[in-house]
Amino acid sequence: MPHDHHHHGDDHHHHHLSADAGDRRVVAAVGINVLLTVAQIIGGLIAGSVALIADGVHNFSDALALVLAFGARRLARRGADAAMSFGWARAEVVAALVNYVSLIIVAIWLMAEAVGRLIDPPGVDGWIVVWLAGLALVIDLGTAGLTWRLSKESVNIRAAFLHNMADAGASVAVIVGGILILLYDWRLVDPLLTIGISLFILWHVAGDIRPVLRILMLGAPMRHEVPEVAAHLNALPGIASVHHVHLWQIDEARNSFEAHLVLEDGADFTAVIARAKAMLAEEFGLLHVTLEPETQAAGCADQEGACPEGAAL
Image (cartoon, rainbow, N blue to C red):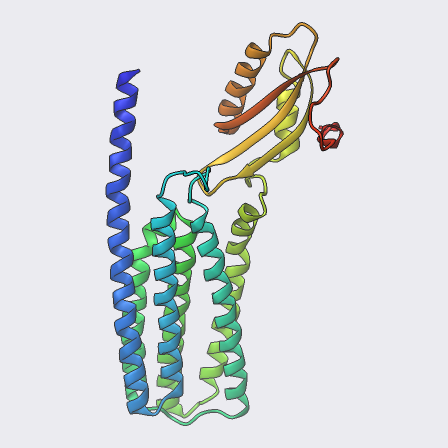
C-alpha cells in the first residue's frame, strides 16, 4: 500500500512538470500573437489596408483567447475548497464556451464584411499585404503548433487552437487573394474566400461546442447512457430495483454517479454496495459514486418525491 501511494506521488509530480511546460507554451503563443497584431496594424496603416487592420484585430482576439485559456488552465489546477467542493476544473469548460461563442461572432462579422466587399470590391492593397499575411500565416501555424499537443487533452485549449487554425486559413486566403488581385485584378476572390473560411469556422464550432454544452448541462458522458448503467445495477444480486439515477460529467476527466438501490429482503447492504461499486468501476470507469441503500418496507426517504421519477429504470 505505501508503494502505491509513493507511485501516485511521482505521477502527480510528472503531471505538474508537464503542466508547467504547457503553460510556457501558451505564454509564448500569446506573446507571438500580440507582436503579430502590432505588425499587422502598423502595416495596414502604411498600406492603407482596412483588411489587414481587421486581420490584426482578429489576431488580437486570438491572443485574448489564449490568455483566457491560460487563465482557466491555471484555475483548473486549484484543489477543492469550501466553496468549490468539486474543485475548479470546470473553469476550462467555461473558457472553451466563451472562446467558441467569440469564434461564432468573429465568423459572422467576417461574413458581413465579405458581403459588403462583394457589393463594392476594394482596390488593390499592394505587396505589403501579401508579405504581412505570409508572416501571419507562419506565426499562426507556429502558435497552433505550440498548442496542438495540449489541444488533444483539453477542450479549453482546443478552442484556442481552433481559433489559430481559423486565422491560418484566413491568412492563406489573404495571400491567395492578394496574389490573384495583383496578377489578374480579380477583386471578388477576397470576399469569396472570406465567406468560405467563415462557413468552415462555423462548421467546426458546431461539432466542437456540443461536448462543452453537454458538460455544462450536466449531461451524461458521451460513452454511457443512464438506462444502460441502471440496467447493469438492476441485474446485480441483492438489488430489487434502482431509482434516483443521475450520471453527469464533473469535467473532461471525471464523471460522477449517484443512485438509490432498493435491496431485496435479507440482502447485506455493505456487500451489495461493494459489488455495485466494483461493477461500476470495471464496466463504466465510474469512480466518483454515491449509492444509497433502501429497504422495500421503509421506502424512499427523499422529500422531493424523487423515487417514482426513476422507477422505470
